[in-house]
Each structure stands twice: as C-alpha cells, then as structure tokens.
Length: 452
Image (cartoon, rainbow, N blue to C red; front, side):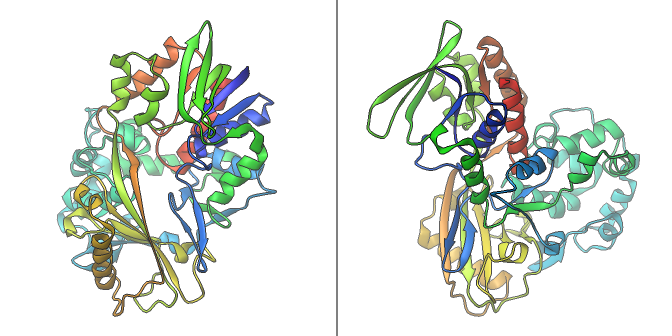
C-alpha cells in the first residue's frame, strides 16, 4: 500500500513528488521510459551543451523561484543574458527587431501605417464578447492584420508551433484574454496592472528567461536526488489503474516482464492526453473522448553547432519566421547567445524548428531532406557562405505541443468530471493548465496540494 502513486517522471511528476516529499507523504513515481525528465534531456557533446527537448522557461510564477530555492544546494538557476531582449522577425528576407514598446511599434517596418494608428487606438476599442474567438480574430479586431502577421503569428509559431486561426486565447493565452475582459484593452490593462502594488513574491516573478546551470537536466536530476531514486521506478510498461472499494489498484509490467500490483489511496496522472485512456480504462467513453480529442502538433527540432561561426552576428534570443514569409523552418533559437558555455569559444549553437500545425508534410520528410532544408535556409537567412556544421542532431517530437483550441473547455470539464466521479484520481499533465515550463511547475504544486 502506497499513499500516492504518480504516473510520469517528467518535470510535472517530479515536481509534484518534490512537494509531497516536503510534506512527508509516502509516494512512488512510475515512469514508462528508462530515464526521468520526460522530454527534458540535456546532452554534452563535442564541447556543446544542448537540449533535446525544451530549451528554456520563463519565470512566470513564484513556484519556479521556490523550486530553485529548495534545490539551491544541488542546482543553480541560470538567467539568459541581455540578448534575450532582442527578438528577430523575418520580413522580406531581412531580420527586423520585434518592437518592445508602444513607440517602437509605431516606428517599426513590420507593421503597416494603418495598423500603427490602430495600435494607438487600441485602448479605446470595446472588449470582445465571444469566449471562443480565435487568436487571429482577436488580434485583427484590436490591432490589425499586419500585427497579426508579423508579431502574433511568429510568436505563436515559437511557442505552440501553431496556427492563430485555431488557437483560442481564453485557453491558450488566458492572461492576454483576461487583459481585454478585465480591463477593456491590452495596452490599458498592461498599464493598470503595472500600477498595482506588488508583493515581495510578485517582484520575483520577472518573466525572465531561465535554464539551469549546465542545462535543464540539472534541474530534473536535482529533483530526483531530493525525492530519492528509490522512490522512482523506471521501465514500467502497460500501466493501468483500477478503482476498488475506495482506493486504487495499479498494475504495470517491470523490465523483467513481471507484473507488479500496487494498492494506493491516490493516483496522480501527469501523462499526455493521448495516453490517459490506456491507463484509466474505467473512465466512460463519452468523457475520455473529449480528452483524446486534444490536438498535438508534430515538430522536428534540429540542434546545429558551428565551431567557428562566419555568418551574421547572433546577438538576439533568436529569429522567428512568420508563416506569410513562406520559409521551410519556423525559426531558430540562438542558444549560445543566451547562456554561457553552450558552444566552444568562437562557435555558435542553434536550435531550429520545423513542421508544426501548418507544415505537417515536413515532419514526414526523411533526414536527408531535412538536412537539405537546413543547408538552404541557414545559409541564406544567416548569410553563411560555407555551410559545414560541426554538430547536427535531428530530433523528432511526435507529440510535441498540445494545441489549446475551441474544444479545450470541454476537455477541462471532462477532467473535472473524472475527478468528481473518482475521488483520489487526480489528472494533471499538459492537457490543461498550460504548456510552458513555469506552467508545469505551478501545476505540480496544485497537484500536490490536491493530494494533501
């Protein structure tokens, strides 16, 4: 008998376990793969430190700070340097800096003159009344077409690899949605929120881009050491949960092929929506299909390193490419420009992204076709005369990023129904509460609180 079983040893499951450990609650984490961290995996190779999954996070809530404070003896928070303030957007084969303020937005060549006047008038427009209005419609209504094409669209490509005409702000970008609903406008709401007196915790939530010193695996490894390796079981196949007389029986097949059965009072699921029906066959089809419907986009991530860089200076966070520009990559992060020690001295490290919601055909290309795209795009966009990378890794993410579209409300309600019908079965994971690193860390605290 265990008090709690956590299914999934990604950042959400591990951070949940961290909080339970602090509260002296008996738990075990079950993980299907042979390693912890989920999609987080840092690699040190040929003088490069690169990520095979998420590259960074944003300090969007106090729980990120508290987690690093808890782990300060074994893991160090690393903030991106000042290059993070510059974000490039491609327009007509030329990189332009995304404006960071109202006056910069008025001066930038990214937006039309008509839409610059619309930006000035944004605080005076009425709030929308359709809770399922798409992001594209919301932005066109408040800011104009060019702002959608050259600010919001590349941003969405960078975060969701998604399509603004399908994402719904109420679910995908609730803070943006609430600015309009609560304050009447984006600009006015931002100004009013800045005037609200901040608590000490609020002051720590800086929205700074972060990683861990040495890469994000340093964070997941530090959590593992805190919760105890003996409390995590890897190579758990065919995990299945069954409610029995006020508690749960969880079965799985271990790496020796032996079926293991554990009784527990509470189960916390942190897996993707696409696997929930497999571990919880007791949930009715009517409910589970609303969760199964979650659309995940497929993404190719390419790690590209050059020992000696002879292209343009990469003094920015990265470059994003609007869909309108009709390129074959979504954008690139300049990891060696953000964090120290990520590339050999004089070299650079890219993380480049392809495919996504609107270019699914690229995901089906073989590695040689992907390499041809990279050679063409990197050479042209970054003015590189000789393309001879010293590091090239192609990583395919079949279930990369969940898309919070119009059906998200039904999915959230379905989760509430499951937890109501089956007390002690708690559903987390990126199927709700956001997709970013900070979202996952915050949800972990919420899951632990629900257990406690």
